[in-house]
Image (cartoon, rainbow, N blue to C red; front, side, top):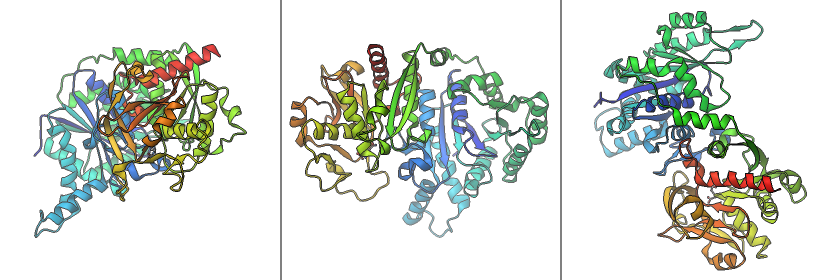
Length: 539
Ligand code: GLN
């Protein structure tokens, strides 16, 4: 059934990948939200993995985890950070998931007697998934971002589903935004429209006419170019929207507002348009762009050469930096190359250190070495997930003298498994979607540093891990000065450790970075940046 009270916007990409469909979708949703519309965004990914949980961060960037425990595309992080509205499994669908549900139905006999085909069975499943959020009644507008680039073989069923939906819903209820690139040829000194013309044509070969073109460009689009694009691509002149390179993604909503993207969209969807209220957003952007001081934070991990691998952490720094009116300069440090000999030269000048989440053995000794240094030198330390586990190992080895202390993940034969596999994980053999995932309750000890930071003793945070603090070592570790201060109320799992004698030494088993948004910077990141600033001032 097609629900016509919800309006649908599809965002496709052409000419090149990595043009930032996610940021355009999030910026448009922000403008619609700021005019009172309930907007949400969904990402359709044309790969065969069921979810990106099994993908290497090198290949796909960070895996973003939602409250309901879905392992999703990192664009969902942008949606949450821009809109301050939680997403869920329904906001990210992959070809793998589509096929899995169609094949499951076939095995259940739901198509008995019929040949199961891409059209209509796969496309019907896509259409159904697109409308789940709209049919919930929670949203006026659903923006659906189609991953990949028009012309890709694997995107075809999605484009076909868009064609059918647009036809069934009508132009007032569904529209297509095509995001393309207008390359600049420096030898000719010209912007070129031909790749966009071809890309719009490719889309038309599948029966889909783009209604709006958003054109990524390094240089201003002249009137002539806009008119030419409109004429060749069958779109209105005002529906040619320039998306010029911005110094920060947080400028994009205002850039889209100046170009009138929200107006063109609302006009076609026959919805009223009002001036959006971006007051608090603009306060954030102004603070982000006019810092009063600077701190240098070391981000220690093994994927540091790729920005996307720790996306949510980097964005959380931006939110917390703006709130503290400080510029956070991140110095990425590759843990694999950190040794006892070079650790001081790489860390001594930093104002704080964050040790990142991760999996597997590579680079862990460097992380442990960095943690020893910051613990001994009173430099603020924040450990996330694997980062917390490494802090416990470091403390056990160097303070308790348990030289063999390790995590079962890295060494199954260790005599001191201070990090052990969770009970519930022991029997699990399948890899996809089987970690401890999503939001879990955590009780904080009164009088702990974290209770002061959160202004609460009961929190919910998102998880993604298999291993945990081994409670058999708790007494020993606590007697030596590292305290467990956050616990799962049902299982007693330790979720937080801190060292009260250190100015700021906190490790968390969960991922606070997934919950930091522009409207709600995460309290732990706020406090961490503040601690870095204090450390720098007193140095
Ligand atoms: N590899 C560790 C575990 O599975 C930490 C995971 C993480 O950092 N997300 O427990």
